[in-house]
Image 1: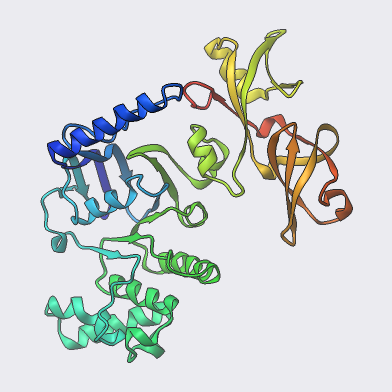
Image 2: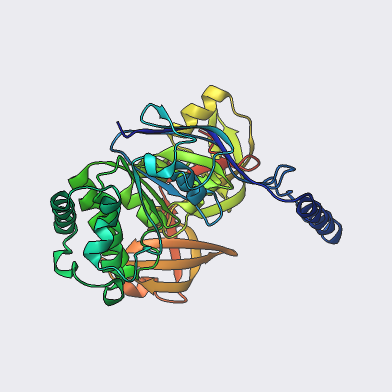
Length: 399
């Protein structure tokens, strides 16, 4: 069993009392110099130190591919390193299989890790890099050779086994780093931003390679990235993180179609979702409506049912509409096209709607391109069943 369970995991990096005082002085000075601005104290700095991860609870199933995604500094790499044993767990319990693993040494966890910077030994050939951990384990030469060559065939790098890392491309180095991990037949493979050093074309190719690799070796993967495209294409489930907290866990489609809050809705999806702020949510003849720039939009059955069950009062909300759900229409909202980006099969429009920047993704098939040229007025609408409504105060989805 290569399942992983994290229960109430917390990670605190200690800081000195003087550093805590400096942080409090900086917070006080900020409040004094900008009294009219909303100020939220940095809750990640406590008297114990810097809280990098907190209240982290997650069950990863055997042979599941889980992606931790979020902006820089959200705690995803720290979480990965705690699973690997490279960081101590301040509080909570980590189980690998059914074994409590908090204090088990990294080398005894049967986990392999692929780093962002490849971490290959420059003086060793590809073969020697891949064989190194097996030699340390004192496996017979014949078995080492068989495992290395089998991994090389899986990754299609048999032709470069005699080369040094300096003679390899970035994509080849990453394949070698992955090969060095899988050659040990680990229970779990951890990957920390493994594609971030590659160009866009290579990243796409390596994503496909990782998907194929996963099908071949069928083990548990935990993958860290800040790139939501990688998260959406690779993960069975994705874990969206912010400020050390889990924001939402679900399949890529669940997170895209039903974001739990404003942060998740804004982070997942390219181009980024359009938000309409300070929108009134009203009740008319027993049904719920949102009013966007003077137009009343009746919410779809999902929201009607959920809000009526809660007997939700009228309030102020944030409405989210994904660019791919903005449709060209004969009547609806009309704005002026300020940016028109031709992407081949689709065009990305930035529309000035009474001072709001609205992004629309319009398919170019059978499209009169003159209608989407710079400076033209553009009329659009969107299906109420595809919008998302969030509480303006809590920023959580209303259903």
